[in-house]
Amino acid sequence: MAGRPDIVVVSLGTTMGLRGADEALAGQLRAAGASCAIARVAVGRSGRLRVSMALTDVVEALAARRAVAGRVAGAVVYSSVTAALLQPPRSPAAVRFDAVAALNRPGRGGAWQRRRERSVLRCADLLLPWSEVAEAAALRAAGPGAPPSVVLPPPVPAVAAPAEAGFDAVAYAGDPLKRGVDLLYEAWGRVRPDGGRLALAGLERGEARRRLEGAGVQEPAGVHWLGALPRERWLATVASARVFVNASRHEDWGLAQMEALAAGVPLVTVPSAGANAALALARELAPALVAPERSADALATALRAGLELDASHREAYASAAARLLEPYREAELRRRVADEVLPLLHPSSSS
Image 1 (cartoon, rainbow, N blue to C red):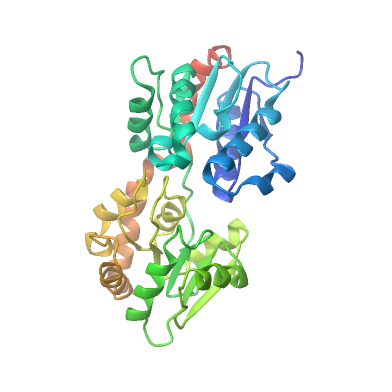
Image 2 (cartoon, rainbow, N blue to C red):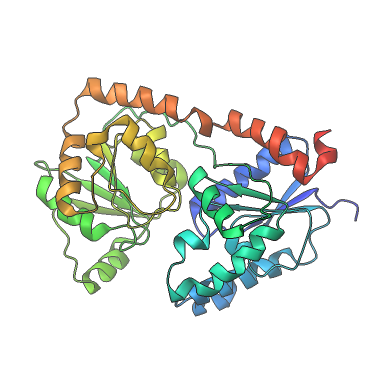
């Protein structure tokens, strides 16, 4: 039908980071010569049914199917495996993901997703994992006959350093227990400098305290909950911190950590499970800031080392981080989309 885009990106967009990644991909496809639209998924009132991981994925997968119905004339890119789980057969189609169910849907709560994703991955024309770890897991899940794969992370923009210092430590904690705030609180309580301030973003203070106190977690001194920040303010908050801290139990890619590295802020982290791209970079940059295990003692030791870095070490860290992030810059990702992705999804646009 005339006027329909060459490619539709089906954006589940459940977080600010995921929405930004979908918008960036659409821009890269347009820059490569294809017309592209974003089909945004609206869960609506059915969102109240998201009381378990299995039901959450059903609700969101059905919403994604509704969002794309009747909109696709050319190629489609599903922004996650969940967005693709219940779609009818289409070609050409790509699946982009930070992780697959084989990595982040363990146990009985992820059984149907793991079974279904095998055929979803095998039937795609192209896989677009965010990392090599996610790529390897997807190829194992798909088995023989897996489609071509191009590693395509979201762009990590350079973040300017602010004129004034901000918090001593910053962390993202939209889901406090998943993000390990219990562990972070314990470590912070042990090493907090005099007057030190720990900022946590992603959730309002009242809701955060309700969840944590319900789990028996008590808040130490010096903690400031900032709520869900606009992206510009979030990046400025991260860039002004002495350190960024990650205590997550699981990380599908580590977007907030990558943003901290882009700002040149030392990353103090535990070895989170999952396809955590930031973890390998953090180990290369400063092994002393990476806890050898996920414990309060180990995190406290790493956090103390991060807070004690002097100006010269911080400057060297920022310079090294900038070099390591070159493969994640917009220019390189646009090249990858133009040279490796678009020829498989819409050959006429790249000829």
